Length: 113
Length: 113
Image (cartoon, rainbow over all chains, first blue to last red; front, side, top):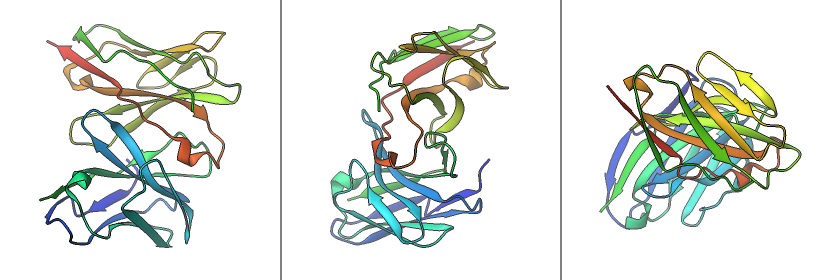
C-alpha cells in the first residue's frame, strides 16, 4: 500500500472552531488531493495540489483552505467548522503519470456538533 | 469527465464470476476508464485502468468494446471479502484536469455465502 497517513483519524469538534487535518505521504508523489465522502454523494473533490505551494480548488472548496509547504504534507483547514462539514475526509496522492490512478489514505472521520 | 452510469447494487454468491457494467456514452477520444474498490471505513483502492479491448491484472479484468461506450469490470471467483462499493471513472488522464475528477455513487456489490 502507498505510504499515506492521515491525522487525526477521528475528531469531534464544535461549530465555529478551526480544524486542521493532515495528510502525510512517504511516496514523494507530486499530486495530492482532499476529498470528502458523504452518504448519497460519493466522493467529492475539495482541493488539490500539484506541487509545493501550488494548490487549486475542486468541486466543493467553499469553507476549506489548504496548504502544502513540503512535498510530503498536505493540510486541510476548516477555518470555522459547521455541521455541514461533518463528513469523512480522504487524502489521495498520485505521481506524474495518470491523473485517474490515485492512492488513498485511511480517512478522517470529522463530526461537528 | 464523461458521465457514467452503473447499477446501484448487485448481489452474487461466493465462487461466482461477477461482471459490473458501466455505461459512458459520451466518452471522449482521450478518455481512459478506471475502476476503484472501496471497503467500509477505508479509502478507495485503485483496481484497474484501460483504454480499449481488454486489460487484466491479478485482481480483475476490464473489458472495453470497440465503441468504448461501455465497459465491464470482471471479478473472477468472488469471495465474501469482495463485498464493497465499486466506482467507474471515465476521463482524460492528462494533467490540468484534476478538478474534473468525479466519483459517482458506485455499485454496491454484496457477496453472499
